[in-house]
Length: 334
Image 1 (cartoon, rainbow, N blue to C red):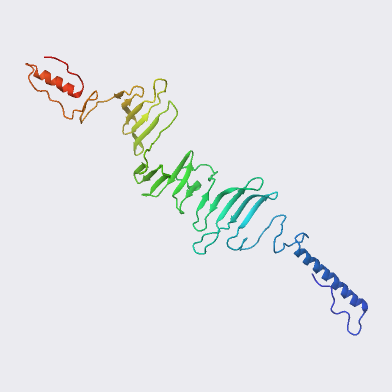
Image 2: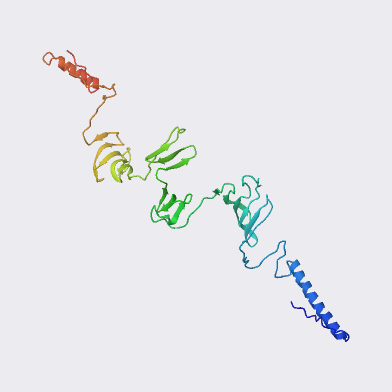
């Protein structure tokens, strides 16, 4: 404010009491106004336009016009936080926590996001960022609410790794992973095993696993298929078919099918009926090793029938050959 005190009054040699009294009155009013302003600055309850240096409450929007932004400073081992309340009850707190700093490995003062229940009690820390490593920990999972990517190469909804185009994206009902040429991809499940894809190889299991299963599960009366393709075109299919299941172990029979160069089904060379175990060969069968029937020891060389047909030795040798294969039991007599 501009002072009303007139230093030219009273004039020298002609002093008037009224001039002196007027200047004293101006001084009194200005001193009292300054005292009121100081009191407003020193008390957080007077409604003054300024906050005290230690604590205070703001009603309304706080806008900071500064190239430095908002700085929360405190000694090591203390929390520096921004708190979001509803009716004075905690809902969220973002803080650099009180983890001690060592001064050597960037440890301590990690960033935490804490959530609170309706009574203002801490629930947990859904997200945690370690300052020394930069690693994020999500204790409650992470959900991405955008619509699915248009294709496996659509990077508009992509989780990139190390600033590259390699990583993950989500198309309709599918998670896609993209890795560099020659690189590997692995899913590890604790000590249970793993799926590893490296170059042209996919490996299942673990060196420490005692039992490992690959399961294809579906509803009844549906095909469950393992396919082998060449350049995206079917060549062989191993599958349990969609024959309806019923009492007596009927349905879900096992089949091996072959496909032509265009991927069109040719036939089903082998069918195994689940209810009986019967193996049906739809094409010729060639056997290049030992063979036997009815659980006798395999004959590893082709039987040779010798002897004379006239005296019956050839017939006896033939019967012996059939018996060695397990096809007959020779109880004939001379």
